[in-house]
Length: 87
Image 1 (cartoon, helix red, strand yellow):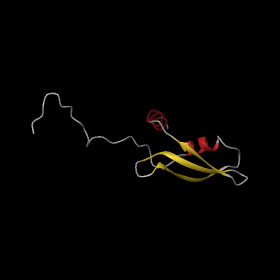
Image 2 (cartoon, rainbow, N blue to C red; image 1 turned 120 degrees about the horizontal axis):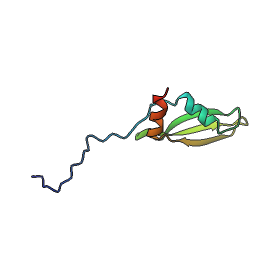
Image 3 (cartoon, rainbow, N blue to C red; image 1 turned 135 degrees about the vertical axis):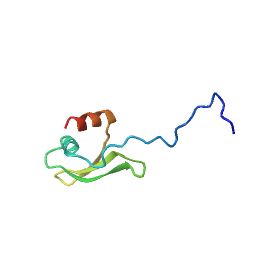
């Protein structure tokens, strides 16, 4: 098969989605807990899309009265890079 002048190469083997660190850091934990009342605990952190990417994370929290709720933690590559390079 010959390649024509109009064929656009597709770099299928060069594409890797951006991935931040695999762990949640202290800043992110403080950020999450800061949105909830004092005494709230994080009970589980898991990938929102298991098998695809680590982020966004599904974070399950438990309120002081025992109720549980989930939130989603998303990370922007530009913000993540800024935070990690200024430490």
